[in-house]
View 1 (cartoon, rainbow, N blue to C red):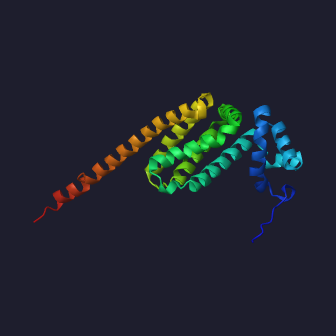
View 2 (cartoon, helix red, strand yellow):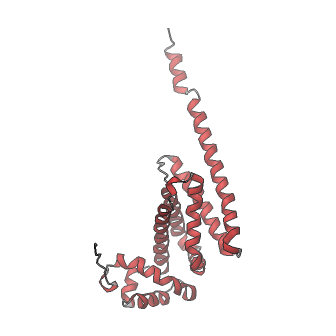
View 3 (spheres, rainbow, N blue to C red):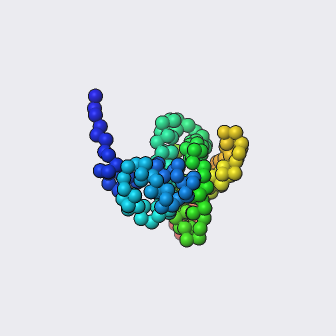
Length: 224
């Protein structure tokens, strides 16, 4: 049996402490928001001095939220792999990725609401856009997307819009097991799939069209 060494929080680096503190933060955010008070409580729960915890997030609320979103991106990818997403159809992969995010956020709905309030502030617009793009990218990658052309960007823009809209809908949803949210998600995913099919048809048609360069070449060098 292989024994793995467990590092005590007091011996962890700041980077190692970040996900640990994020997890400990969440129960306090519902009451204290993404604040120094919530971070101090998390530090006490983890067993490190409050001033060391503040070194982990010197930027305050925005850094805490950024770290939490990054952690949920990674947790979603791990859960996608556990559920065998590679064997699913692409529509089901994307739907599952967003469903996982909602399921993981359920115990922390107030934390999500408060995070939205922080990210909605004008000075945080760049962070809001960056984290949404990063999450959309993480979901597409977990779904097996390997596009590197312009399609790479349009897919993430579309999914980011769907994910953001679904989160906002979910924050107001009081249906059992978030049934209304998942119905809303299904309709939005249908739209993405229709767009992707239309783009595929366009590319196929474009590939079969005569190229202007070839036509001009024939004018210049006509066949004997």
